[in-house]
Image 1 (cartoon, rainbow, N blue to C red):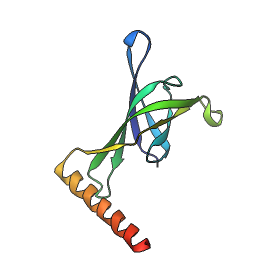
Image 2: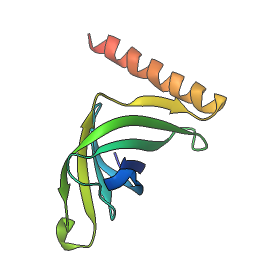
Image 3: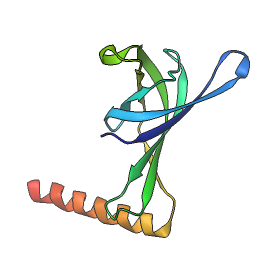
Image 4: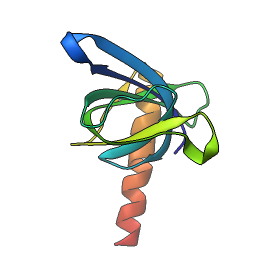
Length: 118
């Protein structure tokens, strides 16, 4: 899934840093973010992923506290870098009543599909 990501971490002496990028790979409890600004390996990051919803107008957010596993510099011979992080999972947040309805509908569809497979 390729979607916008914003992340924060604490640096030396308690200084707060922020970066943004795009997800390259994402699962329930892990993510790889392509970005020009990488936190260091083993840093605790607060990650927010912005999801465009199927209605085209609404957006939802997924948030998670994660730990950086590795940092990759100079991806594919260009100036971009990236990092992988893992955590206990994402929390889904919606920013409007309309987005909440869209997400609820998507979750119902996913649940119905799983029941059909069983």
